[in-house]
Image (cartoon, rainbow, N blue to C red; front, side, top):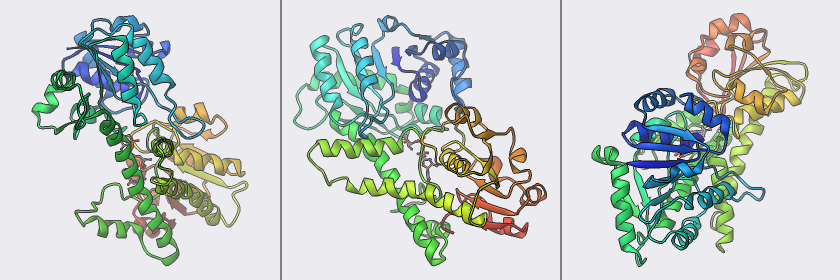
Length: 442
Ligand code: UDX
């Protein structure tokens, strides 16, 4: 099938490469010429496992091309919108890129084509765009097909998702336009034929439900993380161990152990901005209190960073000034070079600004960090960061940090003190090597 993908960021680049990999002909468009040049050379513009191989395989088949010229989408039957929806000044989602991409795209859409939104948008956006599309190109159909990919697993999550959600006209009970909805379902089933054949559940709903599935899933995940981090606060004052607590409550199948890791909380390009945008949207919808709890979810999450800075300061005897701090990890999570709203980078910067000598290392995120925070000192290995350190902070749970041998670390640091911001180390092993070990809520 002829497909276009508008936007080549984390979402669009992965979607475009994955769609080509499963056999479609893809044209991918972005306004950034450097990004397009890199992708055309087969280079991934950011770190994402499996993306370089997927891109190379797709490029070798000749089934994918990258361009800055929107007119090249003409001829595609399905047009995916995968541009960013950053946080605006008031917390609400900023839709300027979605609107600009949509307006430009509609010039090349033909009757019968699908325009498929993948970006995370406030509920109500799809209905507005659907009306605009029908006015501009009668017979074209607007679908909302949210994306649930996790960075670090993006290619797998795209090719073999745990569910497909189609928000189509007529999908919600009582809505008109069943014919357009049926057409959209048939075409999308062709796009995702491989995943459907493999048994992926596919849910057909209306526009509003599809938009809400995405934001409510992220709100739920954020709430789960903040719940366990609130328990970490309680564990800290009672001497309980939040990790053991999570293991115990997680064995209740109704609760589940996933997303119950206490530590520095959530960051990244999705959860923080999505809960704020959802909250702002509920207020616009005339429901000022319905999502009040998301303010708490946000506040608990941000308090973890304060707590980590406080704990590091305590471990250094009350002042960080002139102290040498090894920061291991800057990305918002392992297997990513993404530092958007990263708790790790935030904590490193706060300690640096407070007068500490911070030596930071991340296996993939040194460069992305340097771009936004050039004043921090970045080193090329964990060993360099650890040399002569007064305290060690593990802020992103990369496997290489989990695998550190505490005895080896002990031989290079000045003081044997470790703050395990992600509760990813074995406290017994580190204590056996002579370390003062401090976790988050344990
Ligand atoms: C998230 C959603 O998982 C994904 O479905 C959606 O499409 C985009 O947003 P992502 O941002 O890639 O994906 O990261 P995710 O794996 O969800 O982690 C988010 C943050 O939560 C990270 O900072 C991570 O460190 C933190 N986290 C996760 C915890 O603090 N504890 C946990 O138990 C799990």
